[in-house]
Length: 297
Length: 262
Image (cartoon, rainbow over all chains, first blue to last red; front, top):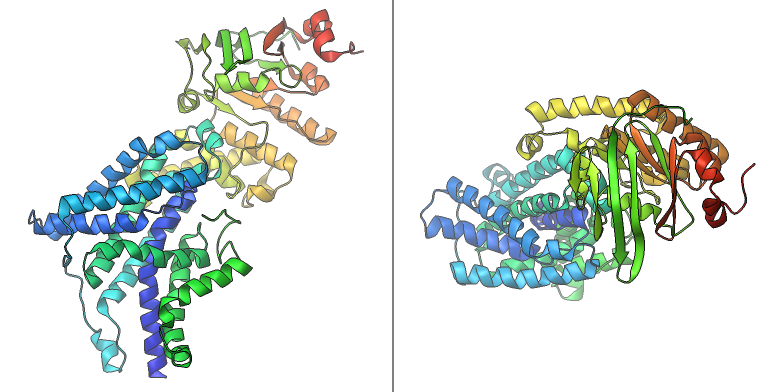
């Protein structure tokens, strides 16, 4: 029983880490209908910048984080200026392709600016087993606990922001109908900069958590692949969906590996999420919390 | 109706021409709208009526001509400039934010009335919270005015057509516009819904003093509501005047009405 709890908990925690990445996708999809292929690379880029500020410029953690947030906001502004502005009213697939291009640009930029070697990111997040549970015989990683708490705060913050504020409403309005949004005086350009900034900051959070866990390296950009089944499960347009989807995938993976793995020779963890996503696509393509059937890319 | 007296000109379009490629949609159109009047734009399908509204609120930028709004002359408006200077509109094919509730839709209409910056909003504290509550009150007044309390929290995508039109009017009113553009507010309505909508339009004009420019197909409604009527046909301006003048105009009868009314 204790073992089951341990597996479930560690699955939940791993799931929250996926959720953090998925959140960034949801924000941009919700507000502009764009599936942002570059989200994973944005997390990598943010983490690289943070490490760079700390190591090469010797900034204290708090200053480096503020600096990185500034960089992500500047990046959002540039993306709007150079890319989005010229693709107004284009098909979603065109915008999707533009984000693929963006992913390569950002990857290259990160390489040029900060180099391509694996870096250690340590901003003082506690690591190791959580003593209290460890005494009960259950191993829970402190870092993942910290990540879960951060994700919870982030989600509450985003939920209030989207539901209760003028800018939140404007974001949803733009997602629904560009012309109508313009007619009530919402500026599309401003909204895009805001939404890309927010998702850039979410990418930074994801980058920090994943970077602290496994080092800042190129493979960080591939965690985006794990976010995809999370999105299919939770729905592309739902913030809580991203969290719950992530947790289901995390727990499912771990439980399947431990309890089903022995019967099929193991290594279920690597494909379980995708199979689950496939099943969802068959029976509930809008996901658990998605608003409507959405065109997939 | 034509006995009503009006003051200054609020909007004047001068020699507006608009084309898409070789297609001339508007050809040398000029008319004015006076403060406080209900001004109709009529004409057969494809006459350029909606294009004219789109020029006024800045969706289309005409190749020639000028637009003078509240004394300022421009070659073209930008949509958010038009909105911030007091032009609100509804759409021929309802353009509501379908996933959002009635209340939220109307709150988006308050967008320009709300000024606190994004940092206060993000914290949902201090001035942003106060502002949110004040504007919420304004939105509730509009909901009362349009008699749609029962659907405040419903997602608008699921509402019947007539109610959606009403919510859309509410969103435009929430901006407290000086000039309200209505693109076929009664299209697809039954006669009872049309009566309700006509009532609202008259009340808006009476109670808030809002100037209204209206596109409508139902001739009975147009003749009843309008102070003055401008008639377009194939992008050209056929006539401009009081309803009874327009009704008696032979060119209009030939091109549009087909047979004289009454």
